[in-house]
Length: 316
Image 1: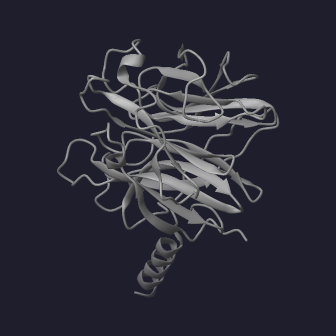
Image 2: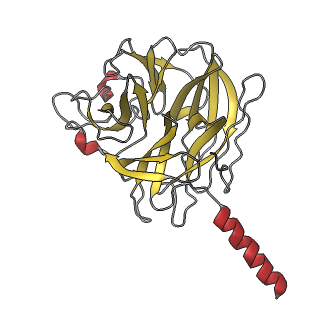
Image 3: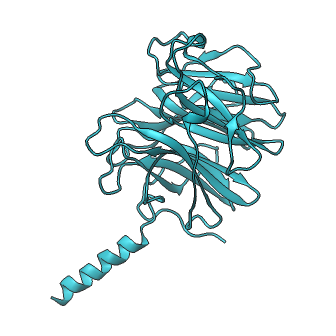
């Protein structure tokens, strides 16, 4: 009996110490971290599908914040597709970046059928003077419509934008489902500044994340090497390639067909955000964001991500 009680105490202790998933009161997906003024902000999708639903239902985007990687504040559903007069879809993957004191939230949703578009996935931009909003439509129209890319015939290929501003001030956006596309953005962040280019990446399926470290550019993405998705990556000496394939860094996640990378450095550590379906009643359409450490080898390559329930340690 004493052994049983001791085992129960140990199990309870482990459960109480488990951090992942980091958000437990709602279902969250597609993490996009941003550091500003010493605070880490986490932009996320919000899964609202029931356990019986067989597709995504994503009503809005949330913002969370932390200063210690353990305590997360929910700033609420600060953006939804309804603020875009041209949109009628769900709140798919998005990323917010800061430039010149403004915060530009690049989002993917679906376009209404009108005189601009026949519908399909589209990318919009919301803007705010604060990382937590209020946000408004920065353009009054979509930045990318389905008609602007023709390499893939399915209507949901223009999703999952990632935006990166290089040291020289040039901004780049990568996105796409089924193929990866990129384009330069003008300094105002709301206009294209180059033709759209399709780039071939091994096993690419969706969810790109672009960043730079020690002069090397990283393009990390959800892959179709196996089903369900894994995370693989490429590197390059320029933000536009050519891209060298570097391998798998995250294996399949528990109880979710998809996964989605978000990478950031904060207070001396590198963090890898992703989602899985490990909360009670969770699944592929009821996902939850997690975070674990990301480590590099001396040559700049990324070590395999170790998925944990403990998550990361508290920082000051």
